[in-house]
Picture 1: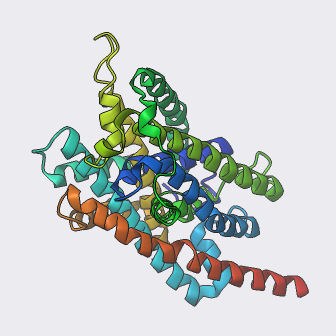
Picture 2: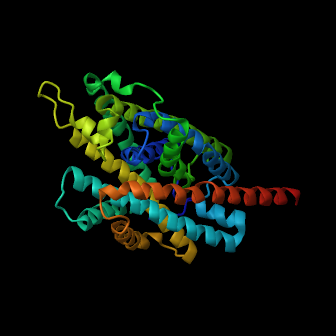
Length: 373
């Protein structure tokens, strides 16, 4: 495996697939925010709007340095010393985000399927799968995601159609039951765990290629990736949120950690098609595999960049093991997941806006100085 983006080109379609799957992995987390569950779909819209500054900043950086990965941009825009500091910070952030994905999958599996299975077993299996998925590089991982993407979208649409008879429109009313500050607060939390984390995603898909290697075409591909990825993932997430509300209602959702799984488990078509929730479990595991794979790849690339290691693949398993150990210490049980998601809002804010903005200012100043010369 090679993390050098010059040798690890990702096609635009694969980049869109990774983008959307990365966002879909956060669907189950949204119900952990304590208020406004019936208006979660409105909060999703608010989260998209709140993420626009971060998306524009990261997109501008990618356009200034087409084909460069996140850490190369740090060094080129801010110099070696500051670049190394930013690289270290974002490597730690990538470890934290990946640890959250690891722990969330273990809590999900223990809650819905294997309550007696030790956490370390689930985390070890999931970490091994992430390492195997990344073993042959980002390009191969992106092709795996591209194959996975249409299948998952198809299943989500089919589940929505099968759920139609379960919809209760009265659960959807009244719209905007909660006040605007409450909805925006939940939107901020959603943004911190989904669209705002595209700052890490950019570190993975920044090597979007063009057929002839043209930087101009590569820039256009990056813009298309961000626009289409954001639009499609927003629509899908809002659709899932609305479906959960229509089937379960707010009062039921308040008592659940994983409402989408419960909503899908209610589907029963004449005793012929049942237990579709198993498919929902598989979908969620695969999307979390994409999220964790992206985070693990970025963390490994960051550590490799700091210590100037020629072969980053040797770090995959040690870092994955380290992340698994950290994930065990994040919280004690599923009840505390809501606390860590609330805490994540404040941690993510630093990495999703002030630091990228500082980096963009440095990059713009440096580019203008080079033009004057």
